[in-house]
Length: 385
Ligand code: PMP
Image (cartoon, rainbow, N blue to C red; front, top):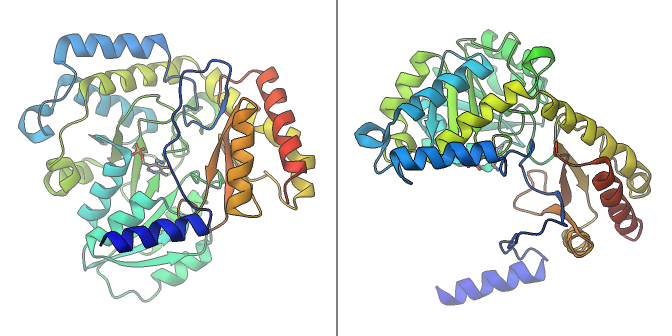
């Protein structure tokens, strides 16, 4: 076994795919284009205060699973507010978005369920399909036509179409209205992961409420939403949202809900405070879109030279395909040294196999931050081949 581990390490080295956790450090001078703290709430004093109060009241940990003694009134209030935010009938909170996706896919899946999933779906969905022992058919990224082919003449009594409303790596949006029609035609459920759109997407008075709020999908019996509390909400945790029928099914069948210690009370309290801020301060979601447009415009010339563009972004995520894994890693390291933190995504974290830089147009970036960051990135990209 140790020989195999050594072989694996050598293969990673040879392919330029060695990964190790980056230690963040507290560096106020660093321009953050890497984190998923889209609205700048992870360091908001109001979230910290809510978490402190929850610790004083309930303790640091939940002490047991939800069905034993881990459910506090905070969990129920959070579920109520989350459901209200996106326009769902009910919500169930998990201790991470990953576990929410595992829970819903395994509880809905099984040998009688066909999972029809966009090929770029997040690993947590793909892992859930495998764990559920469902048959899985992947369709071409964002191709409703291909999804329809996968559903045609199915022999399975049940089917689920799975997508992300804004894709985590590419940053582009999913054709949700057409996918709902497809789901209705085939009596399928539409499972939408809103990890990267909650807090960011939504229009008018629903700005920040996610891609589904205010559309025909909100409250639709065929639609199930999953969300994370650890990106725009600045906390930690996940949720599944849908009808009360779905919620009750998960409470009884989702093993990652039943057998996992409940979400920690301070995380629940911080997420609740974040929901209040998303409603009261729509300027944050608006700033994400403004900053995304500015990043894209200021990087365009350098990207054209590389034969690529950042033009599909529907939210905070800006994706820059790079010529190789080595080029992506070198560029991210150089940016970091110059005071700009960007994401470096390489296989297996890239669903299309293309290594890239991933930038997040966070709400609290100033125009000067964006100008400085783009100057650094342009200089790097101009030397990239
Ligand atoms: N879904 C998507 C699309 C994600 O990007 C992520 C996190 N990277 C998750 C689910 C998992 O959420 P969490 O980090 O809360 O486990």
